[in-house]
Image (cartoon, rainbow, N blue to C red; front, side, top):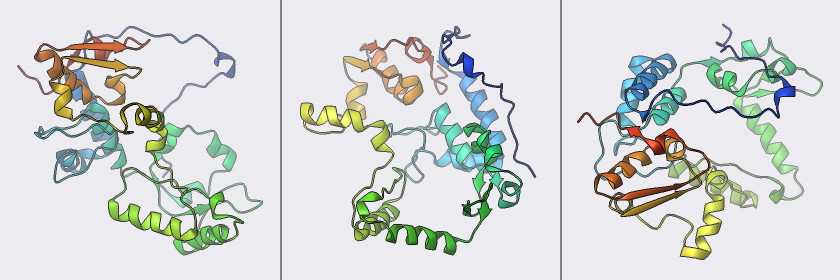
Length: 279
């Protein structure tokens, strides 16, 4: 069966330089009941109740797993729903049962696949087998894991210098998997092991190390919640790490102030309704 496809408006290259239009938000506050209803709709569509409820029950819990959406730290005392709208949707998306089979891929040329959007491929689901594009072919074909690993090994062995290879890693990998992976790479003869944190925190680490002596945060989550003043520069917590809004809420509740330096007036920093606050 062909993977489901969302209707997308055609993109006119002539509009690439058009002015960006920012429309006013319908609500005076971000999150709230709207966030809950949107989360329920997306999680049900992606994974269904049977998969969604156990998944969300373990999200950011001590006996569960870290949310794939952001790297915001977990508080010592965690709520039943210790996640944000983005995190719940990301977890449900990863739990989707949708699959992109080799049989369907065999019906599509490379040019036809190139016309699809990233969102379409994400919704189509995971690949069920390794695939390869043979020389002279206009489409992908499935191969076994043994053949795929042999092909990769042959290519690595042919490199004139191991440093010509890079091995991208995941910040969400288990310690055991990460250890084995780096052991394999170092045995090959290189330490080219960039990971996802290089994309989002490399610049902050470079700036922090010479100024405060460490490339990571030097305070705890509890320090933020009792601060008299919190200055947020160049980022939007409501988008980048929505759970930070809970910490900022506690700052305001004890009389602290929040200063935001950002050209974008984001709804989450103007007003927010905590979906778990029923008082």
